[in-house]
Length: 256
Image 1 (tube, rainbow, N blue to C red):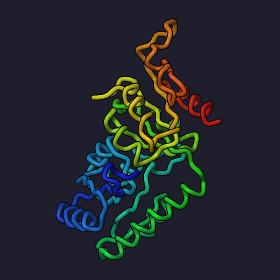
Image 2 (tube, rainbow, N blue to C red):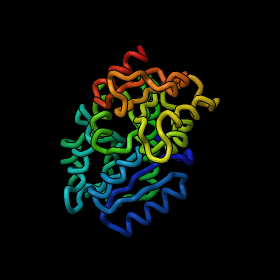
Image 3 (tube, rainbow, N blue to C red):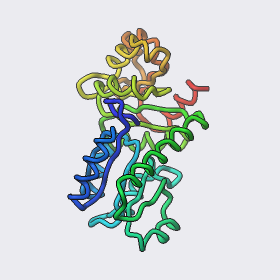
């Protein structure tokens, strides 16, 4: 997903610090927003707070390594949730072509021009594929990582493309750029609640017609919905649970 700045975002994961710095500076100069991580474990923390347009991943690292990272970010179909370009030693390319389902491989070291060309090819292919399939785009606003992963998995199992944000202000920043078809929000969000974010989105011309779902676990089954929800025309469903299947069913009902 494009970053708040409107630039395509790349996450670099490599334990070689000098390579990480040089690639970061090069890709930033080419107009990308770049985040870096020096281990697979650090990379997993980064993807909890961003949805990169591309991950460039070194396979041979200490700890869980590149393969462990790929397992952790796999969706219900076993493929990584994000586009991934793998960097590995030339002698291991054939081995990984046969074992790993990613968007591309490059042998280390490689020329910057070759890397840049491959990055642009992958990003262009992903954009074209999304356009052909008409894939439903869902933005999920949830600051608790564990339930967010469960909800995301349930939505991706329906074939939907999911981006994740963790606060009300982040919804306001990223939704006009990413233009999701559906926004799903926890009512209780840091710095700005879901209903408040929804009321502000409703008056943005670029967000006109964007449908929203809010889930509010503070509501009991017996009480009526608070009036604040009735005033939000774009909020099509208010749920009293964040059960992943209930959220997925609500989206299916809204989108027909």
